[in-house]
Image (cartoon, rainbow, N blue to C red; front, side, top):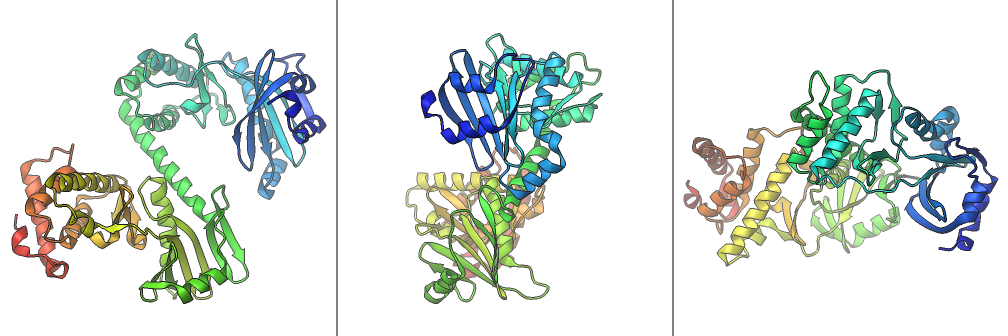
Length: 490
């Protein structure tokens, strides 16, 4: 993009704003920066924030524009005006403490409309989390930050740049706080946030050991990997909760519905109105009478609201989002509406989905059946490892679609911190009783072997589980599922 093609509206807004220059970059004005810009690249853009890269003959700069489009944002910045320039002040304080960080250049904005910040580009790459030398360098850098009382509330590899001289630089200082002293538990908490983001990149164990070894030099009480892992899991659960709650708020993906006679939530871009719901009720095909119907490519769950009864549709709407953020496949929930005395959940209908029992019974080849059992056991182990418990875990509530297994009937799903063995066995017993006799005893034992992969349970423990699952199978009357109990004796 040439300099002449820079949006005129952007240039006008920037030039009309009140601008302050940093003493760290004397002589560089906004007019000079815009005049020397030869290329403009959009790095990030959403409703509230834009990040642009300005390339000039003397180097590259990053322009961060924050728009006050929401009323609560304007009120927040009116009540706390200093938070607007928090990153500007933090960058100057970091440089004053001899901490390697991005250099601030300009700041400015229009009252009640937007504000912006310009920083110099830091040449380098983000941490690759592979080299032990990089781990030691990064561990020393984080230790120096903590020793100086600097706490970064959003510490992750994306906010750190490693220069060619193996020197880390902070490039985002919005959530930086300066404290007189960092207690040990605060250090662990901050490292847990960093390692939570590192866990998504499958960081090698030797890299983590090298990082902690460099960080613990000079500390009276070294921080162990177990402490950091425990705090890492805490941050993971916080992330899941915060992401899941957005389905009941106005966010970039969801919006609240407040119209005459209608309340609820929906995904942005989904445009159904009450008249479409009434049309679906009149023309749709009922799967479960007065409870679930299909209309076109949508599945609509209906719940009649009564006193002292939980709203099943609202529970399924929230649980769908909670499982989605945990990467557990579920039919995509599109909207939740409450009208008069009924509530409705609209989700996608898996047209080509196959019920679990039908899918596993479709294999004639033993190898393919074993592969399918292994994949399903790994999926179920992942579900239980996330603390997800289905109260009625039977085969009709699991569908195979597009190479993945999907959970249905979300109103009976709950998420707990950690599932006890009793609940895991309960799910195994329900599943075992609901599958047809096309699965032999060996198939069921193989499934449990795949399910417990890596646990190395002793033989007596496995036999106790077998006996409990078999006992549940007898009590649940397996003849209802077309099973022959004599064939399942272990």
